[in-house]
Length: 186
Length: 186
Image 1 (cartoon, helix red, strand yellow):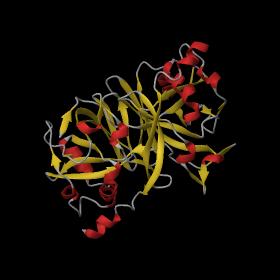
Image 2: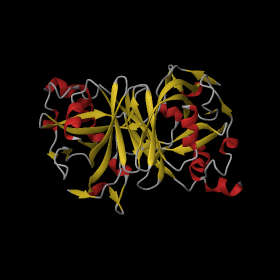
Image 3: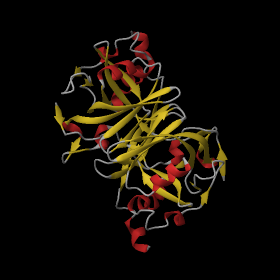
Image 4: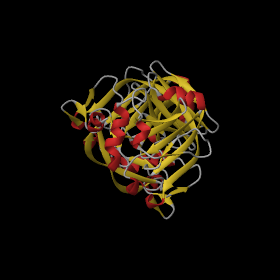
């Protein structure tokens, strides 16, 4: 039995990330989870037009995507509560830069992706920044056999519907594999 | 100590969904997890250009996003293994339509979003479809006090790095709340 619940966005959970950009030549970080993957090598960010970060991304044509761990939930949530207009959020973290020079990254986050802006899509109330991942940095402690292990990353998953953060559960099946028995039946 | 791992996309986990589109006037479903939220009311899909689904989305300017539960992992994975060119994937499910008429939805999925195409972004090897969520349908059993409860939905989370599906863990903090104590300190 289906219930209609209005035009409610339910594409959750999504990973909460700290997006880094230089604004007025200084590093700034914003917490968002309205993000996505647009192709194997690119990501998108949906940012309300009022945000301080947008001007920095447009000026430098670079940004970073930093994945915080559950142990960083307070700092992460704080970076979604206050604006870079009035607070120096970069003071909470150690910042480093990569070869793009203008995409500040957070040392304390286990994964950092340095991105180059490909294009911007203008929507009614938000701007969508699509960027190519040009380099990825991570802590050695989150690798298993050289591959990023999200069980070790412990990302902060976000759900808008009940305004909450969730942990990742267990790995339970292999992709492009568990459905093979249905292919054989056909 | 940071390790460089190349230009590796690590914006995971993302929710695995079944995207519905009418192709050649018949319903078709593809499993993807390269998706995201672009604004409060819109979503994006990153689809390789070779996929069968793309022509249907472009023709009708509609699509659906259906969230399967972990109990549907075999059917979901199957819809990522085979193409609508050679298999009638809709035969696996009961299809229903909403007011957009051309966005087929899956009865067995606990959440269905009916979407209207806003714009398409052409990337090197993929097309990004951005759509407005115009109506959302869900099973009553996944609601808690009228709000979608992802603990009940049990979505299938996807990680490309180790090609695996993960379960959602526990809700552990409130968003726009847990970081308030840092605001007060400043």
